Image (cartoon, rainbow, N blue to C red; front, side):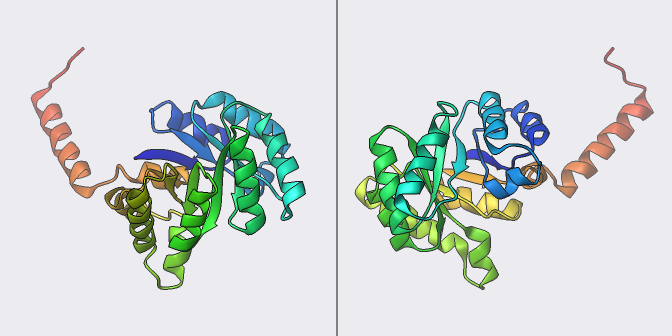
Length: 217
């Protein structure tokens, strides 16, 4: 499963990228606005840092303006993936941009039917929101499973990008359900390494090393 980092924090992306844990980045205008910097500038900096797709989101809701914004964003870098909402205008924009050779991430997916429409429109990625479904006492992973089955049934090439990831268990479950990609905040990805038995084992090992006076150099 590929890991995308869901942030506009340049330092956090760089830190994870140096460990080989970054296959791409997802961001949006709200995340970039928190940095107080220009959207185009930050997006370009992220694109220059990572090799994989960088999702940059449009803010328009009508087709004509959405397409203009998508084309503008696509010019920022070769690895831009334009993010559009799962509306009819968004799907129309997805089809137009895909036909032009631009990668498209269709976001705000909450049903298998929506995911099927996005695949038919040629989406590169479909982003089902796991955490937001969980907030409604629905199992977001059930949606991942349904989309996986439908896409496999018909050979759709659209990749399932599990989004709204809240914790390490979401990452594990998304991988078990067959999501192609999971996008998560840096803290969630870093948290995947934690286990009390690893810490306990390391403490015991270091105690033995100290007691025996072992040195490598």
